[in-house]
Length: 299
Image 1 (cartoon, rainbow, N blue to C red):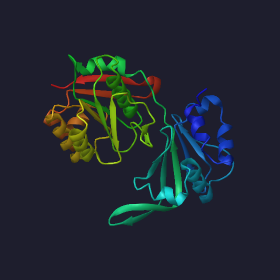
Image 2: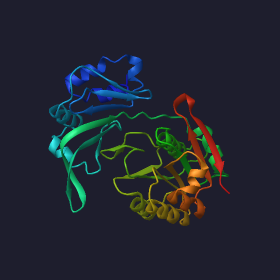
Image 3: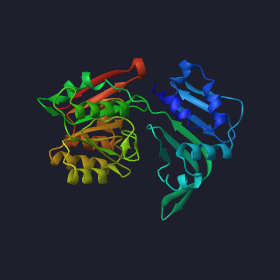
Image 4: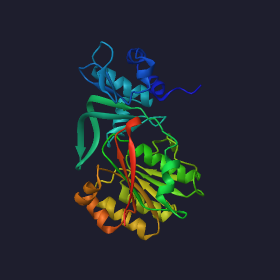
């Protein structure tokens, strides 16, 4: 029997913390999205209803170091030298966000010291959303450039991942070659070269570098038919997407917002809109069972 995502994460924790987490009711465990550990405060778990304290013993600096060492199977010092981006990806696609005192060299974060808090995000793949949506994003056999537009927590990345999987595995049309520019490691969650969250058998993933650089590398080296990326935030991302479209590649991407008016008003997104990059905009509202999906055709 395969352990649940929550059980996978809890098994990586030091014994005292693991025992506290296992006292949660089973129904609660399946809803937990993050485990939050802040030095000097009780551990807490985060789900759709907010944060809830767990156990009766405050988190210490030593406990934080133990969590890093046990979860990564390496010394805390070794781990901190690898987390310039502020997080560590674990087997199973789970990730630990790390806060503390940053050591800056040459204008960049070189390492972290004096850890103050950890956020352990539990990865859960949701499969099956793509099949009903993909036909609305296709014209003939070609995927139309598509932007998933929604506020934080609405499931943009989860939906993006399933669309990548559906296109790559040929759920509703013959399989396509997908390339994922996974700057923050949230789409495929690579661990030792293997995607921990399934993104399809015809998908290539490049993570750990900015999207503009990744798109250039993928175009030159992997001959993709579709490039997917998460969290458009700056003009460099826009320029990379325009470059990809000019090479005949289709796009899948996500961005923060709630309405088509947001897309037209905010500078970075307005540049995309005015350039006519995207032909479909998927608007997500709400979350979980209360989420609605609206597809806008951009002409």
